[in-house]
Length: 560
Image (cartoon, rainbow, N blue to C red):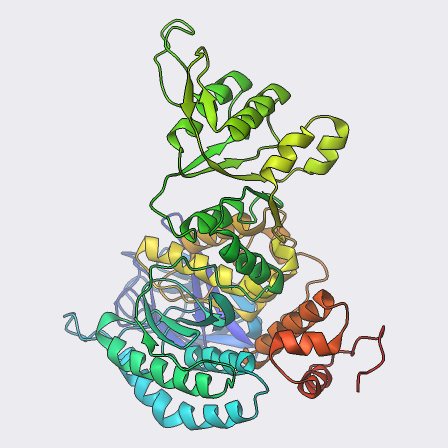
């Protein structure tokens, strides 16, 4: 059990975590907890856990340490629920559950700074490189020897890199398909490639990259050797201009982006469906960037944001004189000629506007509002909606011919509640970004915080998660872990939360269960086909099903 002192100072919340070794609280920078208040002395009070209470020892402070109107003298024990006052700062004593006290995931790396305040050459990753080579590499090779496939090897490598502190995140891809990822995949990355594989290590300071690059190349060599099907090839350059899909542990999302990478080379129109906040525009931008011509124009228009007359002017352009004071201007179709036009919320438009869009797509020409002169508009359409367009077609509120024009390929993005294996990584990423915007280091997430996030339904999907982590970042200090009590009440009090496990091994096992279950579902329960897709033998798949506590498909007899 841990302890916490909670109070307020200058309109912000104070949250002082007290570990088993106790802490000194004061206004000096070398205290364990710093309270920047003029009534708090430089070294004000020592706090020490003592059985089911906290001991407070005033260290000769000028304004005293107070409890219930009396100034404390000597060592005094206080209990949870009671309040103590340091000068003018009042603090409440709280118990904190063990799983909500210490960060288990997503903390930003710590960089050493000398006490004289001068900038120093970073040493964190350099030390981590040495530690990895001396302590982690040989045990990793032993675990790799027991792995059944390159996919399992990739999972072992990325998790070990992050656990060893080599960077804040790592990912391995094979021909643009993500095999494994761990930690926070943000910021500049060390990148190396060999054959079909690429390894990226994120969060490595520039001065420490040579050592990390050497480790990356060494691991890739092991990975290629573990894959008999991998062709030998020279190392790829450390940087690449190819569009990168988002790194995800969701089999469904991986499949969508794998297909999108192939489709991007064509001029087929695409319809992206899914709930609000699932990343429809992100997929649209990926399709454009992966097209091989990312310098072509990519324009965006939210069709639900404008009334019908203004929407027509934005889409098709308008001629001067159509109305008083109107100046001629080009529309999005005209401006996007030769490129891509992303029409968000395409289900929120009138039938008349739908008919005009259909005409543009058929003729590859556009007529501005008020004009009879055609203008070239050869545009690839990527449309998105959260509405059920087939149902709207049946109801007569969406044109069937337009639906077929825009839906050459349809991708339905899964809601965040169906890809819970991604929640912790996304939350840590958004927290790190928000803390960086404040100029502080993220302290990561406690296990209870991860459990609360994974137990919530996220009706607003990824966008809602990002906003929540941005809000939470306003209430933490430098390096302070995010605990579950910082979340909104509806998140932290969600009934029936399912813990995601404690520690790295449990998280990896859960991710592996998700991958295997998803592959078996795609293969209709056919174990041989699922094993082939996973790149492992049938016997290995059965063994992993047993080890992970998963039942083999009941619909089919075990194949011989």
